[in-house]
Length: 105
Ligand SMILES: [Zn+2]
Figure (spheres, rainbow, N blue to C red):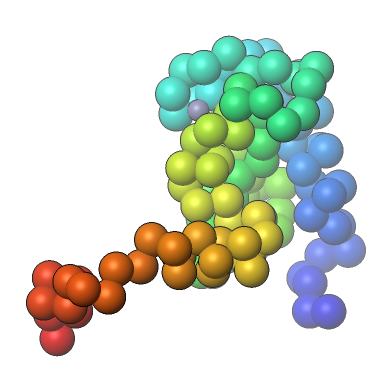
């Protein structure tokens, strides 16, 4: 484990959602969908996203989070999703028959 803070992502998620409700954020800042704080797993359920992705050096810190809807989170790649699942999805969408446009190096 090499986390810089003692907070787990789960704690950060909870805190971020609590903060969002306290701030009166009722809609997704990206698509303006109304966020359903009562339910999880719906297209408009609130999910916590990194403002700066891990890949770009973003930290697991509440200051680096924002609450967006599940649909937008999925669209952005679900950075906290299952890596294996994402890889499988990438394999499915990978099209080896178009090497000239996809791999132009
Ligand atoms: Zn959205």
